[in-house]
Image (cartoon, rainbow, N blue to C red; front, side, top):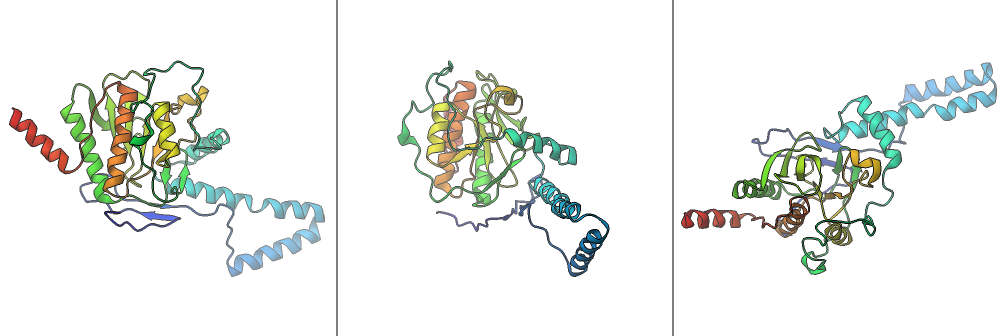
Length: 306
């Protein structure tokens, strides 16, 4: 890779430039079944079991012992939800209860594209006309993903330089095409930078095309089924757990996909090609996203033309 980034499987700490409005956060996830007892707590637990056996029936005591870990399991699961940071769901206990309920309907396989064979879709074909050659295979295994709302990438985090360049690229696109696009706060996340279509042809949240996550540098976006199939098959992302259509459209569209954080310049170029496809699906417009030095060259060319 052009820029080396350290990775971890269960802990991700981001250091962003001071210019960012959102402070860096730690994404920590732990086993919800893990219950740790200190010495005094272990002695107290043993004494409680002995007293319960003497006072209560053995069968009732066994039931209480079996149910005892449940409060710790709920606590650990709640902490995992809070540690993912702010997102589309409030970081409160009521928000946790909502996500726990929605988890019952989450996709069991986020890597298989949905079927749209019986539905009319416009545009009929994806941005790249079903051409598989436009997207290479992503190197390495898929990163570890956790959560629903928010949904975050826990390892293989992208580089800060690629993240900043991506943000600048989206802002530049909106400046160069103010009649077609704008940037603003994500409608899905309620925070973070997002790219919007001014005149969407496919419904999303206020025409949102994509948004970037400050905490893990991954993205969410809406893609044409043709393009989504290629992205999923080549390992660049996965479907959102609630992107199954039907009544779940109240939360996210069926075309809603997470794209993994770019780790180097090559991956950033690929991610920008995917964003172009997302822009085509939502707005119907074909545009090119300039990256890095190309942005500067593009601006100089525009100045020369004027």
